[in-house]
Image 1 (cartoon, helix red, strand yellow):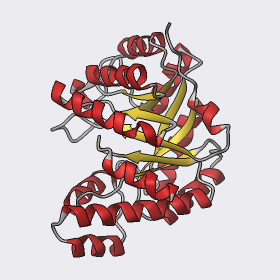
Image 2 (image 1 turned 180 degrees about the horizontal axis):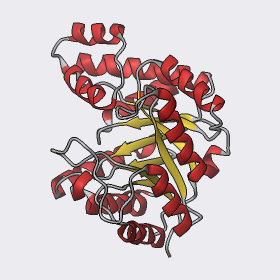
Image 3 (image 1 turned 90 degrees about the vertical axis):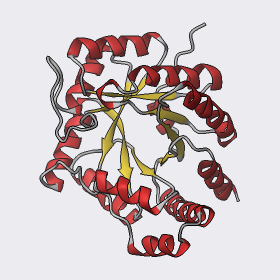
Length: 293
């Protein structure tokens, strides 16, 4: 019998901190098996839901559906597949939405999406959509029982001209029907708290989930933050530099920083936290163990 997912909005209504993990679809079958092992290892951490990213330019779209189905059927996770506007017509987006809905998924992360690799600018597909709020509107019109998430940028979307313009764009997504927001990664909780305050003053009242990434490499995190416009606190950089090239020490520094962030966020009323785990179980399990201590 087909298992229909519970809307994530029902979980937020419980008023307790939620824990979620983000997976990305592997490029080959060997990667899928490794992801399966990660998913099994994370089961004892009891995430409230997991999300699965969506490849730009058609790179992993079929695997997004494959991985989402695997996590749902084989592990019983509530899965929030990502869906983007990139390279899709309205008809194609409706077809994908119908497929997800027919397979029992009731939660989708609705995103504009990044330009395909090698392209510097976002291009609208033929009869496609330009903005995420348009995707939210399309999905809600097609299946009103979808619970939709949207992305928020505490330090501003790199393409937004001003923080005010960025907040207005976010408000349009919420007004179109987004039920919750997950933030881009950040490493200074004050950045998140200021963002939540600005959202509240701007009329945005849905849950705003902080997105966190435990640092595994200084080089890697500098690359990520340069792409998304996030900043690295100088004290964190100094600690990572002091760790040198010893992976175990770098990972320990990253986990300790994320653990401190999470504890503070939960104490100060965040609706939970979303971990960008890069398909690795070790740091997520270390955080779960640290929080249980």
